[in-house]
Length: 194
Image 1 (tube, one colour):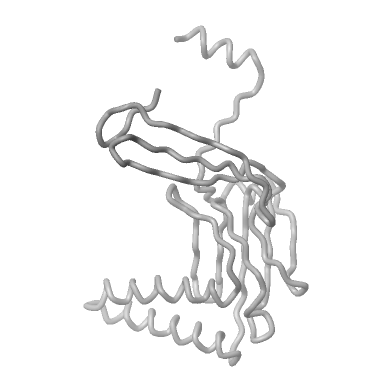
Image 2 (cartoon, helix red, strand yellow; image 1 turned 180 degrees about the vertical axis):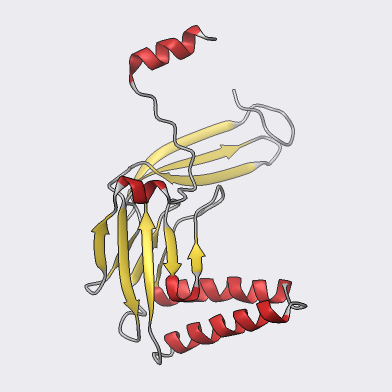
């Protein structure tokens, strides 16, 4: 039984598995309570080999599709920009230009929050100008998408895909808490301790 965080009554939990393009199988959850509390989420129900996609961002690749699962990390190394998964991470499907806009909005927010720090404002303005020039096709940058569970990707003929080593993948944030239980002996020992 799971209790509502608002009123303490028993929650109604519904789950289903849904097959989607790009993401594969998703586990959809819906949690509701009579008091009006609601929460819905989706999680990838598949784990694949760790993967890295690399793409040069230029005027020819702005509309390449980018699929980011809840375990995907997106980087633009030349500018030191990273979008890492966290506990409230949501997956999305967009294009390269959409990724640039997402980075721009975060940099604008950082600039606003640090408006009294001239060095930070200067750095933010530099990043915003570089992103604008790339969107206008006047410069190029590198877009990297990495996923320890293989559920994120760049869909474009010019994207380079490579499998990551387990060591590289273990250094990535996944945004998920994954529990692995190996064998009945482990389960029996754990239950005997209770």
